Amino acid sequence: MIKNLLAFIGAIAIVAMIAMYGKFGGMISGVSKLDSGAIPAYMDMFKSVTTYGDPARAMMKEYKVAEDITGDDVKESITALAEEYNMRVTGYVKMFTKPDAKPNEVKEARIWSLCSLHIAKVFLNYSKYFGGFMPCRIMYVQLGNGDAFLITMDLTLAIHGGFPLPKEMADLAAKVKTAMEEIPQRAANGDF
Image (tube, rainbow, N blue to C red; front, side, top):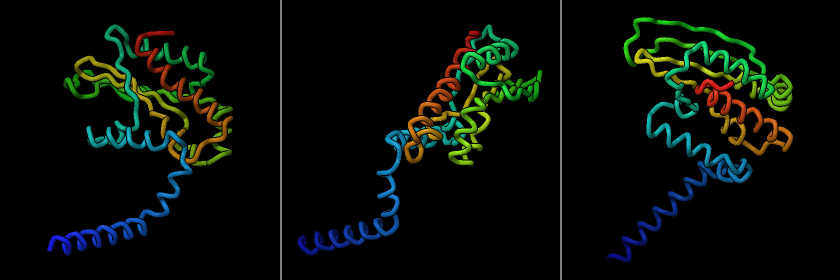
């Protein structure tokens, strides 16, 4: 009886493996072609989604703005820092201000667009779909309780989420990633 039960379980396992291979076999062979950082990047994103339930949050980096730093201070910092990182501020919009915002409501929102035009051209010539990441953006959000944050896209998946980029492109992408992490981090503390 136990022997028959184990044989039945084994048969089900074999059928399940065949079905899984039929459904996912092509993807499994494709995984070996991905950048070595792809799986960890997707897993980090998946962990964030399962923790917070918010896919937008999973794709962003957030920097708390120091209490004594205003939105105007952040604007000056970002403008100055962009040049240091060879980025150009290609746009700025003060989206709105709501003076009577409740503590967890957005009181003020601003957005900066930044780009390295040379790097943008290289990436667009590689794949026009990189245009969906351009220009890079930094969002300033101040809540009604006074807390303020700078939010920018985490570029890890854009860089490592597919097949490995050619070395020159990977080096250029690393420069943009560094800029888009360090500019908001430094601006959040009023650095120039």
